[in-house]
Length: 467
Ligand code: SAH
Image (tube, rainbow, N blue to C red; front, side, top):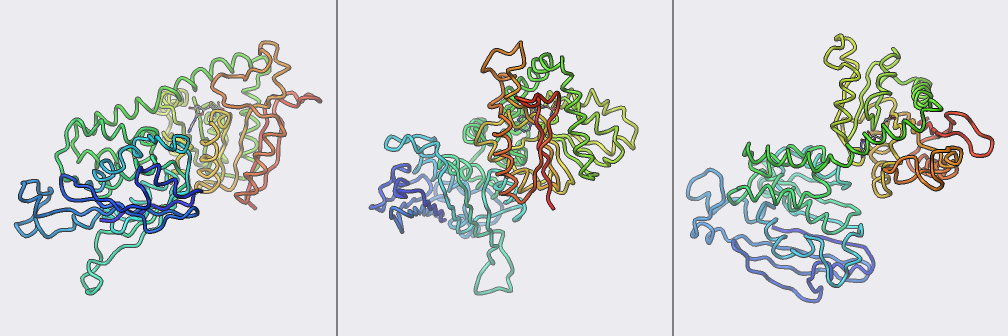
């Protein structure tokens, strides 16, 4: 089986340092089930490609009674797709041959380890049980551009039909260790099989290699199920721990946000004014089907439900606890059927592409962007404006200039400790103008709350729309 990895990061030959494999040499490594070869078909300063070629010794595997799982008779043990189809054998080879790169260590280039690099991955034959749609649902939320071509069973006998294998190309701007971890976990998930017995330690492996991306992945349940070979107990353990790991931060931030900021802003009754302004801006776009992204405890949803113009209202938040509070506030279990049909709450994160968000007229993102740090903000921009792409978007965020008028707020501090930034009007508008230009939207700005001649209003809103 064949994995090819190319970078155009400059100098591209840094790839050799990150992988700890010298581009000038071709090397072979003995594995428990065969041999892995590593070589570089090209290694210039502009472009560097490494190949991992894994040979599976089927005869050796059968002799050692380590035959791959699966049905079939005697012949099947020797003649099958395992030598060429990417599978858990490839994951083991990645861990054995590129172990330090996979775990994010580099003696020679430590500064490059977490740096997003332009990377192109090619898998010559990847079994995709679940088809191209499933393949995309795994990689696209992680920021990959995916190209896939289904391979025929045998090119010389087209009448035999198609195989379950695809030739797959993935392109992304991500740290190398992230790409290797994604492949390590997702290749066997796509194959939906493993060549070895899956026990408790497999849960640890999944969580370790899934760190930083799996807890919030929209397909995390399917990933855990397949990775753990559908063993209910293991899957339940993994999912419970994934939820734990994804939550503490957003939950505490949502809750403390709600309390602290609320107290400070109460004097102005800013919250009410903001809800009114966002709801009015949504209405003015003529939208019927609307999203409230980062809906928190559901105050805006409550206001939107009162407006009959909105026929479908979907709230999404990364915090389970906030969603539970929203469910209580909105009396979700006691709503009359007509109202119930209009409202849905989703658990999800705004930094991953999510097909559930596609096809809406408008989206509100109220007091959320200031909770996202810079790389996540960039991911959010694409998730919302490129992938979900509602016709209109209403974004509200604090105006930092106004903070000087708050007596209780010490100079230079943000309104809430979870805020990663608070923007001046000029900063917000520069960001929003850029987003609008990049994604083909127009944007206009509205103040919310008392509009001071020098420092403006406490909250600022950007209303984006497509022509
Ligand atoms: N929109 C609400 C809540 C604002 S508080 C209001 O105006 O009252 C910010 C909310 O954003 C919190 O509920 C927090 O859980 C949510 N949030 C933060 N990061 C998120 C992410 N990546 N995806 C989805 N929601 C997120």
